[in-house]
Length: 90
Image (cartoon, rainbow, N blue to C red; front, top):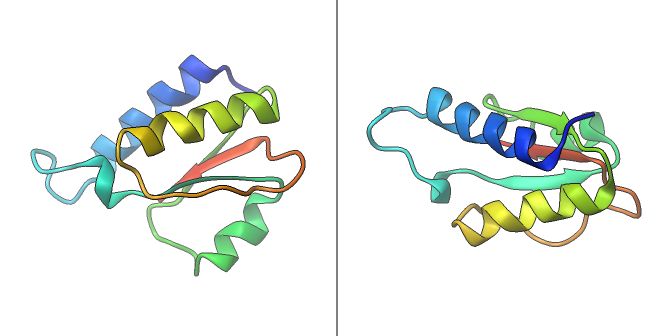
């Protein structure tokens, strides 16, 4: 499990390193979500190529990370189940 700060840093690194053109990346090209079951959720999203996930310390931390990136322009929405401790992006 990881802290809010460390997951945010890992997500920032992931989207910059996986962007098609490193100088032309943006939050609006990425989707963020939270889930209780990352394997099932990845399948539901049709197994995106640039998928990555992290386990947060608590569901509250996962929700805060999701909101942080949605506020920056990432696509995403509410949901995730009762105890969504995994944060994912693609």
